[in-house]
Image (cartoon, rainbow, N blue to C red; front, side, top):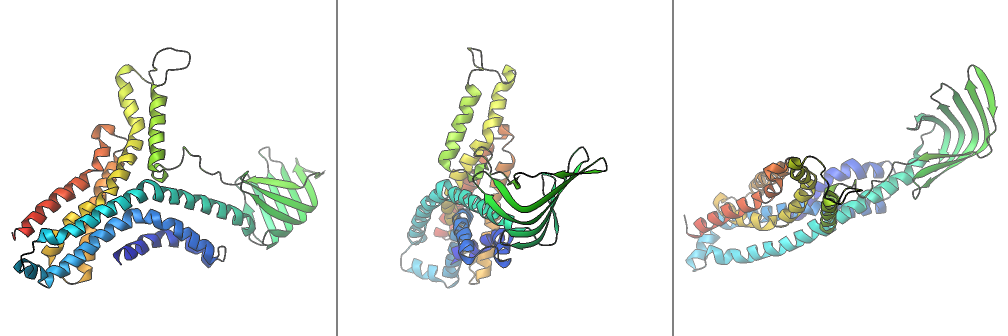
Length: 368
């Protein structure tokens, strides 16, 4: 139940910002929106699953302690460690689930979501030329469409002002707009075309032999420009090794290893180039073990709180989550400063929560 709650809360931001407007405006069907949401859910689980484990443990053991069931268990000769080991074992199993989601499934789904959204927006954007409005294209063209019926246009007016001040005016009775996502262009096929060029106060009729206009779509991001967080673990490893080979490869026309900078700065420059990829590798691995740290600290804290109310458990879970991901954010912010070892900051919250959780669990088990 906590997993469903946290998934809904985290997913809500993405849905409201990117997906819901497409549904409300009638541009996307329910099936398309469902496909968008389905691809977002595994990526959201990177963060929702550890938070759900922590909240569930705090709620369960808080109620367990508030109802004095721990006292009854101890009176029956059952220690807290005996009661806790199934939960800790479950948290280790969930670490494996988190690892699969974090290292492979989540980034793959995130990239698939972005590709699907790009293709969808590219396909509908051509049909969204509003009627009776002037629309300026980034290439410098200005469009006016009297009527638009799902890409079938009529009463078309196109202006183009060139850098030398000349203005081209094209009027067409009708037209058809198609989207070529493979070549990333719009194609506007015009019929009944008349064109006039205005230059130096004189008009000149244009002879349009091929009344087809091509406009570029926004370019899909290349593999290298893809965000590091959207790469799978295997892709990150390949990227890291490729950067290493590039930094160590001999310069063209020489037989010795290159010096990208003076010898004293080579190691530092190499560390700065590799640091972002190294930080992301460690971040993915470290987040995969968050469930165990949350479980270890959640059991004794839930018993210490001794409250039945669910809001107390959720509040405490959020506080611990802020502390945990605060270390992650600090490490990410220092990725350009390799001298501060930002990749080790990714492991700091795991070690902190596990050490503190083990100490608290030992004290609660001893009745201290």
